[in-house]
Length: 398
Ligand SMILES: Cc1cc2nc3c(=O)[nH]c(=O)nc-3n(C[C@H](O)[C@H](O)[C@H](O)COP(=O)(O)OP(=O)(O)OC[C@H]3O[C@@H](n4cnc5c(N)ncnc54)[C@H](O)[C@@H]3O)c2cc1C
Image (cartoon, rainbow, N blue to C red; front, side, top):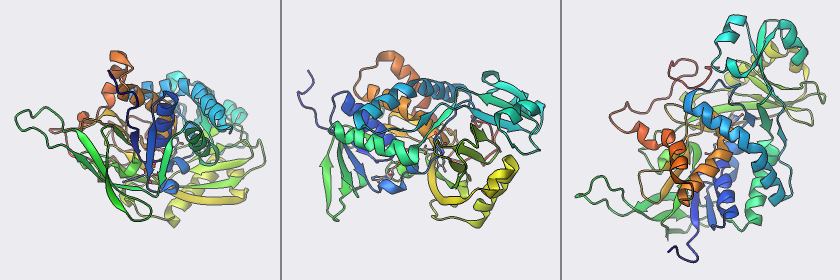
């Protein structure tokens, strides 16, 4: 029989996944404590917030996961808004993907899910689109959410309202597990505690038998066998006249995401070689500005607002690591790369379902393609595909 009051689940990392997991656990009656090193470094505060399984040109299991998450998002957001009293800025406004030729459009991995557009159709969807774009796909089912200004804050408040405890400024230094039994090599060691440093500098071992690793791009520092590496992204924003851009415009290397109040978020560079180097670079900012003027020339005249950067957690196949990990009692929710906002809803549902053992074989089946074991030897060592260079990339190469 389960204990009457099981110990809180520790959530390692208070970014987007950490918050989504803690909220789901609390909603399902299980106490959670979030250990968060630095709230502001989370990619959840950086992302453009596109909900774009089709516009991103995802394929295979990742596309199916993204579609399931997209279907779940309206109810997920409604729950967060009800729990927090705050709006999240969800807009299922559709996304337009432009192409130079109709041949490129028809070869797009998710073309079958979109509405084909010729030049006249493109102009109707995106008035003022640049002259080099001759064809397009409209994905009316895709959308966006204002993660940076609304969703993250609403999730934090929803968690607090449901009794989640937060330790801000608390760095997890080490996972402590029982030594594995050499006579039973297939048995995983059991999580026993995490070593942490609190905001006041105090170090201690916190006993714990159930935790979720949600440290985003930094996940491999706690579990080096996980092939998760940072892919830096730089962004900027502009203030447009309200309604000037009716839908998200998703070009190669640059996209424009119009919020309801006229703010337009422009993203994003993709810099695997940058590691964790902080700050803006002239080259990446120039690339965004050039992409902007090619996609929507008028946008180059809109007043600039902010510039920022962050780190996507990327795996070699660019799909997340979900479910049970190499240590018993430690679940994984990391490696979401450029689709973490899209995938937060389904990640919380599946990983919490697995942790609470409430989903049965169907849930475990959904998690199976995202098990960390797909990268275990003898597969090649971790490697990040340069954007657009790999035939095995589950995405559009945009
Ligand atoms: C430029 C850019 C644009 C993006 N655009 C989109 C988009 O349009 N749509 C989309 O779906 N996704 C997008 N993403 C991806 C999305 O933001 C990420 O996939 C998602 O935020 C990952 O969530 P996470 O919780 O795993 O990591 P994060 O949100 O980065 O959070 C990780 C947290 O873990 C904490 N942490 C790390 N190590 C430790 C430790 N040892 N102890 C305690 N805490 C620790 C960190 O402080 C951090 O707060 C974008 C990302 C970037 C960078």
